[in-house]
Length: 403
Image 1 (cartoon, rainbow, N blue to C red):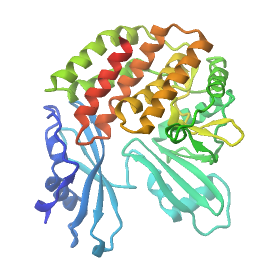
Image 2 (image 1 turned 45 degrees about the vertical axis):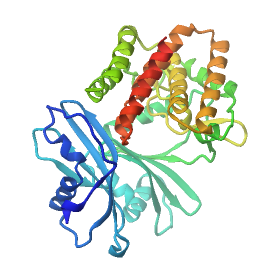
Image 3 (image 1 turned 90 degrees about the vertical axis):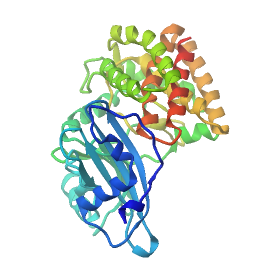
């Protein structure tokens, strides 16, 4: 039965001498047999087995998550499971919501235990059940859920317990800005679970892709109100650009192995970005992960931030550069009207920022380029059959900015 299972999509990824067995993670028959050994062989056969995400730490380890759909006549719900390999220990498999790095996820993801958690850490409610929806999940790292009780909805951030304190601190810092931010309704530190109030609005990325033009003045007003706060006010971890850049460079260096054109693009970008990153220092409070998909446009014209956990000492120009980099890669790698609209808004926002802030064009280009360099790792994380083409195209965009 296992020999007939194919994995979607079919991926050809460079081998890693530091991680024995990496190629097996892309072999459907091997993955299916590993699943059966870990969780027991089923009478039913899978209808589809596909890769969801691939997190690679070259020479050290990898985590691959999979989605498993069963044939209709099996009457089994879809499953998510993950594989961790490091080249030394036996491969480790676990199924969602069991995740040893996210100790509160299993309870937060089950309706009965979720209700008990809400009653203990948020507010007492007479309801008998809570509706739980999974918004996103990155194995071993974080998850976002929705908890709905009647007309009341909370967004639930599940993370490693060590990250709860910095998130609460970042919430205090972002309150200095004129952005609308979700209220922390409660948190369970030991489980790594934080409940946030729901704010109705229109997602910024979808709005731009449909041809909308969010007010550049309102966005820049919000950013400037954050940047103006004293850098020592409240919590929030300092942004570590050097560490994040080095990690991205390791991932991209491995992924471009054997692809001479992409490797040339990588080398050209690194020659200019290496000295920039080495000299970079935090200069003000900043959001540190600011982009269009983080924004909600409210009916009254205000803008809300749905994610602010990275807020802390950083760099205003990197906030704008990251926003521009996300728009640029949508425009550069897309092939539809939505890509054209993202490109047009990129030009609009960049012009507005330069006109208002009087920044040096070359410095802003460097900030946008280093952010886009890091975003290029998403072509590996969200891996597709054309990942090599997309990665090469992304690195080419980085060099177009730098030129």
